[in-house]
Image (cartoon, rainbow over all chains, first blue to last red; front, side):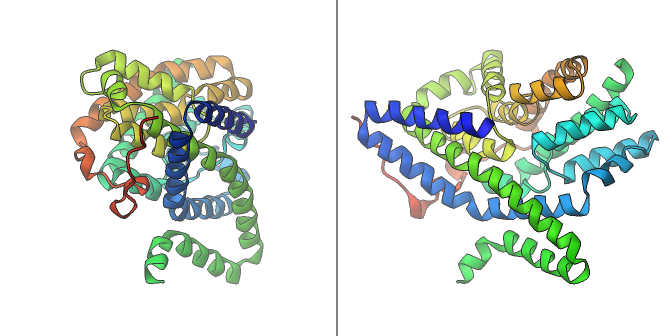
Length: 157
Length: 187
């Protein structure tokens, strides 16, 4: 669904660009193509890593993890969210199931936040764009933020 | 050949791990290959269009515009705009990196780059919709309420903890010297 919208948007934008200027459109295509080639190695690595991690830590193993309680379990769940990376259409139904199975809302909130903001498997790609220092700082701060959000949600809900 | 191997060392490393896994547990390795294939099909639909859109952004959006609205002097309005741009996004965070780098190269402030990435990652609109329907609207809105100030704080801290080098020092796939491109001619 998102893919269809995205491709439609891109096609529309290129049609408009082409109507405005042929040379600029060609330049945009060239930049897009070169960038694609540039991130291809990191991207393929990430895709492989996601597949591997998801095989070693399948969704039903994750739901067992959510039965852990206490601060240790909470931290473990946040760490798992940083390590695992999964597409949103898989992640949200899983989170919904976890809540119905009785997982604490605090850990589900921390899990969603680390799942989306912190990514060990996308780190090489991020380093390629912004450098190791930026990546390490952003991911660590986001991890702490996820813990804080989880704890606040646990207190409020 | 060596350069190629170096470029793909992450991917070949993962491949090697998979082969190793195959030796110990063929079922797990098959599962990993299946996951990889299904994720690859998703990535193929998302990354090329995003890269092409980034090409348009590079060509059509003038540096002065980004500098004025997202640059160092843009203040809270710049942060708000960065957030707005992030919420409208489609696609996972790896699609945001090239966009963010492009904004950075056009003069956006680092805090705003971090805010854009954070918003894109965790509170973009398509995500909030899914979150509300699968977990609950109250949960989604409450997480949003805590995440917005958190992301602003992360952006502010990022500038202090890990300042990015000057724009010229940033080397991205699209901007490597050997691939230096000419400025697109004006009309």
